[in-house]
Length: 256
Ligand code: FPP
Image (cartoon, rainbow, N blue to C red; front, side):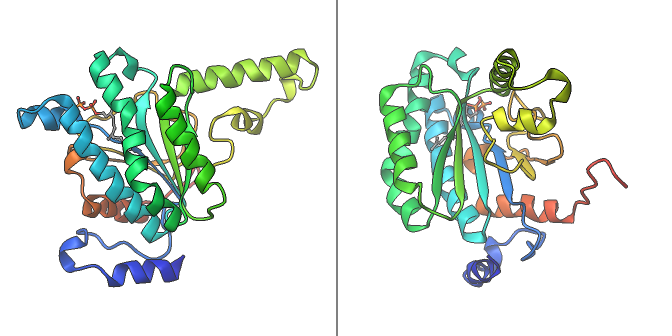
C-alpha cells in the first residue's frame, strides 16, 4: 500500500495538494461520505436540482479514483437514503438512474483498478434497471482485491437496525441464542456492514452537521469531518484535506 501511495504522490503538483500534508501511514481504512449540497449547488446556478446530481456524479468518479489510488480500503458513499423517496418523482427517478449511468461509464476502469463494488441497502422498490446495473458490477468485480466501493443505496440506518433486531429475535425464538448472552458482535453480524470494518472517517459536505440516518451504529467511534463545500464543488484536494486532518486526530475510543 505504501508503494502505491508514493507512486500516487509523485504524480501530483503543488496545486493538487491540500494545506495539510497527507502522510503515508495512518490512512483511514474506511471512509464514509454523505455527499450533500447538490440541490443548493444547482439552485445557486439557476439550474434544476438534477443538474446538481449530475455534477455530483462527476465528483464521485474523481473521489473513487483518488481513494483507490492512495490505498483507502473501503469507501462508502451515501447515494440514496430510505427517506429520499419523499422527493419529487422526477428527482427520485434521476437519482436512481445515476448508479447505472456511473457504472456504464466507469465499470471497466473499476475492474482495471481492482475495485470491488458492493451494495448496502434494501433492494425493495429499486427499479430493475438500477438493480441489474449494480448486480452486474458486483458480479464483475467480486474477485477484485483492491478498494471496496460500497454504495449506500436505498439505505437507512434505523431500517438496518430494525431488520437486525428482527433477525436476532427470530434466532432467540428458535432457541439458537439467549437474550442474556447477546453481544455487540451478534448485532454487528446482522448489519449490512457485517463484512466491513466500521468507518474511521465520516465526511459530510454542504455545511449540514447531522447524520441523517446514516450508519448510526457503525459511526460510534468514527472521526467526523464537516465541510461547507457543496458536493459538486468538492475536489480531490478537499478530500485529501479531510484525510490529513483525520491523521492529526488522537483517537481514544473512550480511553485516555
Ligand atoms: C444530497 O444532496 C445528495 C443526494 C441525495 C444524492 C447524492 C448523489 C450523488 C452525489 C451522485 C451519486 C452518484 C452515483 C454514482 C450513485 P441534496 O440533493 O439533498 O442537496 P441539497 O441539500 O442542497 O438540496
